[in-house]
Image 1 (cartoon, rainbow over the protein chains, first blue to last red):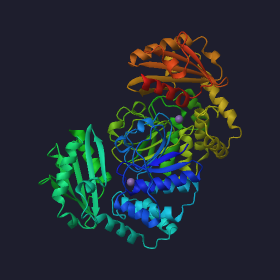
Image 2 (cartoon, chains in turn red, cyan):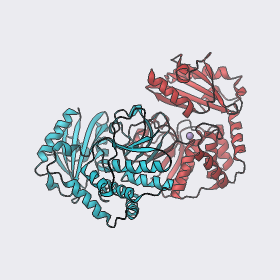
Image 3 (spheres, rainbow over the protein chains, first blue to last red):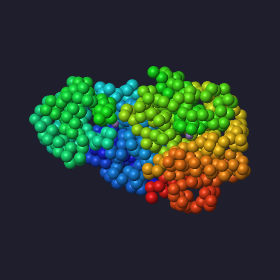
Length: 308
Length: 308
Ligand SMILES: [Mn+2]
Ligand SMILES: [Mn+2]
């Protein structure tokens, strides 16, 4: 029986590239594995797969009775809906430890680094499996994406060394240029429906019993949002109601200015005040230096909900 | 600030030896760490530490405000009572994934092998840190204990190779003899109060909302229990009431005959029938081939509770 290797809902490049890279590794060590995905590819991920000659992993949402290797999270809300009927055989991740549990022993490769693909590179090293050039390419891009080309505070020395090694294997001379090409693709938001943009990199979190959705759009210039910000705000308000959420936040991240404008709809008017010491004005607040949802946005928010 | 490295409540040899071995490794790589323990040493563990010249780790039950590296479990019920006020920086384990969660990224070294110390050996290899002879000795003993000298179904090739490598480093010629010496110490139950025996290796599990305590005593001949079995049964009945537990099970494991007699007090009269297909007679049932609580007792029980 093959295991499925699958990232989180609303997959980002780390989830998709990680599923492909880990499924390849598992097959090489005699454990049959199939890469899968829980949702559509983002334009950035499509650009990466196209660049290195990969098809999208199998679209599959139901895993009852299957063996599953989880990539890039350990949260029930981000896992397949029927994950409780599946057997989780492993988790590779770089986030806080979530609420997934198992009834049998498993392997967990979880490290406090910038990207799951950095951990997958450690797995290749552990098993002494050679990384093919095209797989090195997509792993490298996933790390450049998650670390915002090393600008994110989540980026570690391990991530940088890993990108350098992968670029060499992939035959990429200037990986920063590849990174900028990726973020240019990501910045092309014109003509895309607001809902598609909001959902492009959207995660739900359970914060002390409250459902909180947080989206993020990383671009090289926030001016691309000037004409559509009102639409985005109307859409996250809808999303809050539809999903019975306590709050929906959308981070508009300027990777060159290195900060984020946060759009907020919430049942708590003082949420950003309590979490970040800055109130919203008309549902918006600029958070200087904030690039990382995981490291700079979620923990403070989680603390704010603990104190309620 | 030093982190504390600590195993589970009612520590076994894996928890104690693992805390010492991992704290040493962390200090070697520039991360100050102190080995700690949540309870008394068992006679087996005392024998191991004595044999290789170690003091018991620091006895410490409160960790609020501290950084903690968890060894040999990932369960709230087995962690320090105030673990929610601590920062979990890592977990090394070989059990099912439990309900501990964190609000910040961490490292998890979890593998489906027979002992946490086998995983700690992988960490030494990863960081390329040399294992001192006496630390190799206690790690080796922890693996021999958890795998019942390789007889347990939880034992993997990785555990066997690891013991072989550690025995060489420790300068131990016949590790099976050391293992038998350990189990002889473990088999000396005469004159020990029933409660001390029941609690010697006792773990609480949350099974679908029900608290289930499971103790285990591994000996080289079940005859040692002939005169005290009634006392043990009276004591687990008390323990059930005191802890408001749904069930308390005590496994009397014969490592030479390779099977366990299970003593049962439970709110469900047909619990072993549903979990293992065998009813109790006068609160006792012989489970042939059953050596491992983790692999052969807990999963079937968990399934039985799911179906209620
Ligand atoms: Mn990631
Ligand atoms: Mn153990």
